[in-house]
Image (cartoon, rainbow, N blue to C red):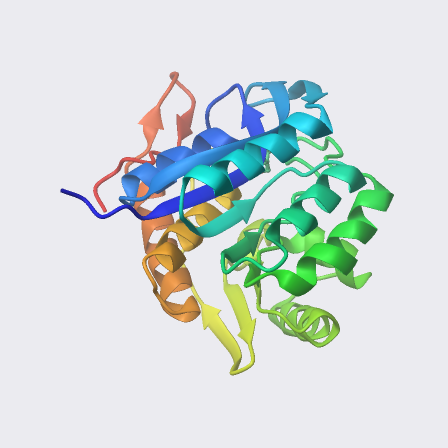
Length: 261
Ligand code: PXL
């Protein structure tokens, strides 16, 4: 019999199956964690575009989280698309005084360019949610936005994570995947900066890899890994999903959450 180690993802549904709730559940399952969900928005999308977004009523978002907390013992949680100020408020209130590790993927803009959070929501997430997180995982464009700077080199990345850490006093993982020349990720904690270097794996559509990484970190935190080990292991997992991709058409390969790991 398996021990009950349960995680929660609060995120959007991706009809294409590669990102959001779907990526999170596959990742939790692949890593032996029982996954629960609170869905914030439903997207109609494929690999090329987000065609439409339906934002769920706040009441049902609140009730999903409350009902999960009522019936399951959640060790760690992650957030994806939160979309609005009100939804973020619900999460801040639901997590107050709870001993649940929280990973925040500050999803702002989709790779295809669609805005996934407005300005008020952004203020709410930085002022209300960042301070209670165990880890925040921006990519380069998100970190540029959060630090109001251009990130073009390893030095810029180091500067940006230091600014973020000094401002919010919680660990950040700055994902270098969007840089053209390097693909290092930088983790900053109260112990300083750790660099995770990885070779760039080309030819695979990386849609959903950000969600998958933060879900994998959440899964390892659920198993009581220390933060550095959780990030290191999640990076290994992501690598496995890219090295043995799924061929969905002649031209397109996508990440395989159930690759040998
Ligand atoms: O990767 C960001 C992201 C998160 N969640 C959902 C998405 C996307 C990007 O497309 O669709 C549901």
